[in-house]
Amino acid sequence: MRHLSVPSKETSLWRDRLDSQGWLVEGLGIHNLGKFRGIPINDTAPQSIENLEIVNLQPLTPGPKHWTERLDPELFSKHQSEWPMSHDQIGDVIIIKLPESVQNHSIAIGEAMLKQNSNARVICADNGVKGQFRVRGLSVIASNGSDETLTKVKENGHEFWVDPGAAYYSPRLANERLATVNCAKELSATLGRKISVCDPYAGVGPALVPLANTEIIDKVFASDLNPNAADLLAKNLPSSWSECRDARTLADELPECCDLLLVNLPHDSIDHLPDLLGLLRKGHQVVIRGWAITPLDALADIRKRITSILSDSEIVSLEIEANRSYSPNDTYACYEAHIIRN
Ligand SMILES: C[S@@+](CC[C@H](N)C(=O)[O-])C[C@H]1O[C@@H](n2cnc3c(N)ncnc32)[C@H](O)[C@@H]1O
Image (tube, rainbow, N blue to C red):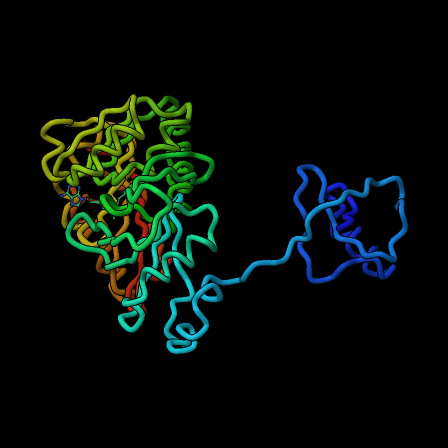
């Protein structure tokens, strides 16, 4: 079929022009030809249009819009309203929650999803987050080759390895990590030098990778109690100190190592805080940036508890932001304390 090859930036302009002349073939896809796009034209279109090239290409028939359209129609209509309509994709791993009523059809679901998502390699059923390491229970239901869930992601322009079946990682917190980079830059400007950062609940290191790539960081200390996370930390931060450690004893090993401390253990963040203070340097401004899941009506209590834990230090400022909801009653709050330890 004939296609008019137009500069990609002018695609919608040309599509409208061809449509208004009655030369467009509707219902077919537009070819991606690099810097050009191929728009299908019909037999009434002239042999030449404004010196643009006309090329012969296979017509692009649009595929199904959703993977459920690839299921056997009889099976689909049997469970019509029960098919999960959304999923998460982490790198080339797709994670989907399957309601019990369709779990018997996981192979058909996995195959349909693989066909629909050409950039996916593995489809996993999500059995929920488990244990203190907050790791997802995943069962592979379809794959193109390897079943492993180790994959590479790109977040805010930075690439790193994750394994959603072995260590915690949530792409939903990418904005929090951008804010952490800004916080680090401000602290470095205040101190007039490079700063050191410690993340004792680092997971696979998503908060540290973008920091390690900046000019403002001197040393990075990364650890996690989950050995799988620690392995990925070493892979993602090859030039940093990274180990498998319990955060509550890390200050014995690394006393006063950092200017910026991250505390991302949202269910127990405040309980652990007293054991972490020894990681912070003394005699100048340092920052604690932490996250806590708390009932919305308990924010004043959180402020009181943090203030009390920091009572041996001068508190320069303490901000608590509760702008992300966790559940109908709970918020995922971020607290940032600027303090000077004596
Ligand atoms: C909510 S995740 C945060 C991970 C990472 N900071 C991120 O943003 O992706 C909490 C992490 O703390 C780790 N963890 C739980 N208890 C710990 C402890 N006592 N000491 C060190 N790490 C711990 C878990 O394995 C998990 O990776």
